[in-house]
Structures are given as C-alpha cells and as structure tokens.
Image 1 (cartoon, rainbow, N blue to C red):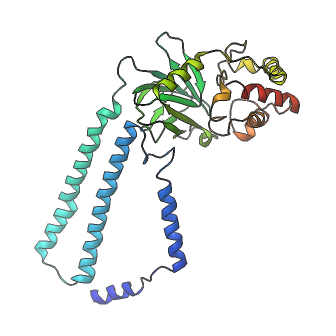
Image 2: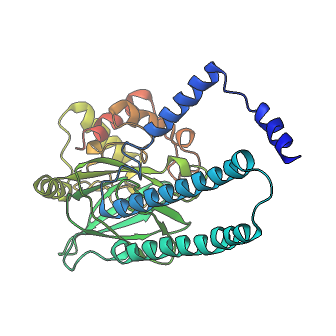
Image 3: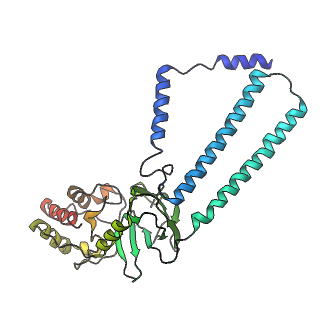
Length: 344
Ligand code: CUA
C-alpha cells in the first residue's frame, strides 16, 4: 500500500522546464551578488560584522547538515527500505533525533553565540575617539566629541580611522530609529530618553553604507548614511578640516547664494560655521559640499541636486521637517545651490 503511494508521488515529480531552470540559476546568481558590496553583513569590514558573519555561516552549515540528514532519512524510509521498521530502532531515532540531537546542537549554538557577546559589547578603550550619533527625522546628526569638548558636527556621514576601536553614543529626540552598518558591526536601536553605546572597529578602508533599520515614519527608507574608513593620517587630516569654519565663497554667484541663504532665514535651522547662520534644528552645513550624498543618502551631491532638494524637499522626502523653497526664483535657487555645493 505504502509502496504504491510512493510511486504515485514520484511519478508526479517532473524535471523543471529548461527555460524555468535558467531563471532559477539566474535568480541564485543574483542572490549571490547580494552577498558582497558596501552594505552586506556577509562581506565584513569590521570586527563586529566578522563575528556576526561567522555565526551566520555556522548556522547555515548546521542547518544544511540537518536538512540533508532529514531528507536522506526520508528517502531511505520511503524509497530504499519501505515497510515496517524495528520498533526499538524507531524509538531510538525519535528520542535521539527528535530530542537529544536538537538539544545538544542548539545548546552548542547558544554557547557559541553567547561567547561572542563580550567582544561585541566591549567598549572602546579609554581615550578612544568618541562620536555621538542622533537619529533625526529622517537624517543622522553626527558629532565628534574631541577631548577639548569642542564638537565637530556634520550629517549623514561618519568617517573612521582603520584598525581603531571607536565608541558611538546613540540616541534620538523623538521616535525609535535603529543604527546599522552591516559591513562593520551589528545593529542597535536609538531610543528616546536613553543613550545606547556601540563600538565600531573597522578592519579595512573603503566606503560603506548604513541604514535606519527600524520603521520611523514615511521616509524611513530614505534614512541612510555613509561610513568612510580611512588610513589614520587621512582621517586626522579630514577631521582637522571638518573643525575649520566654512570657506568663503569665491564666485559672484556663490556670494549671492550666501546672501540669499542668510536673508531667507535658512540660518534659523542650519549652522554654517564662520557665518551668522547658527540654527541647530537641521544638519550643520559647514562642509556640506564635501559629503558623499544629500538628504541622508537620497540624492547625489552635485549642485543640481542641491537645487532640486531645496525646491522639492517634501516631494523627495515626505514628512521631513524642512519646508520646500520652490517659490524662490530659479536664479536664486541656482545661486543657493552653487554656494552650498562649494562648501567643501
Ligand atoms: Cu529612522 Cu527608520
């Protein structure tokens, strides 16, 4: 009876159509392509991410062994040795495979996972670089806390020296965000009313991408940032430049842009160090022209993108605090864009 049922099932398993087979292969290749790149937890560039990736591969390997074991056993009893089995063997298999084996394997994984925690949670040593990151509506406020207490502020970009453990202090003024740079470390929530800490230790130079990993509003998916890992000397040079005031505009158009920036009240929300603009609501724009992206990874950082952003803020990023200034004449928008793009 059982044998005839098995034959019935096997008769209905047909090989995939050749065209479908090519699509399956293509889909697998595309999925594999996702394993690398600037935002992949499987292509680690930091100590924390290395632990997470190793744990992942151990889990995948274990799961594959169990899967092949179960499938092998199923084929064995259905196709190779159908019919009644020795009840003692069957009981041993149920107790051994159903209770003892999972308990031992899962306990092993639990112990391995817990053994990673001390290193994942270890703070950076005393005297390390400290950076405060705040999850805003929908961008990242980044402040380098120097020993002198004078902070260097920027937005949507974090630069780190390679091989150095850096301490992050993360919080949010209103809703919960989650800070995640998959290539460098694990993720951690940014919770209003408390400061969470995370140490980052990049192991190779490069440009990596981070995202908000907790739904926080209409533009949650547009809340990204870049992490640039540099050689120590390059990083020191960059930080020293970030601490400087904004460079004065050189062209007539850029000077007009600066005057428009100040006369249209942009300085109520934005700071440009070295000018009267000292607002704290929006991103510090002192060196905005040197950043890799605009509007938290939403647009590239060219003069045209500045123009588009200023004119259509709410269209590009729904629910953002900054109002659109599309009512300004085109030549004013252009002057503003040229000025901001020049703030390198
Ligand atoms: Cu911030 Cu999602």
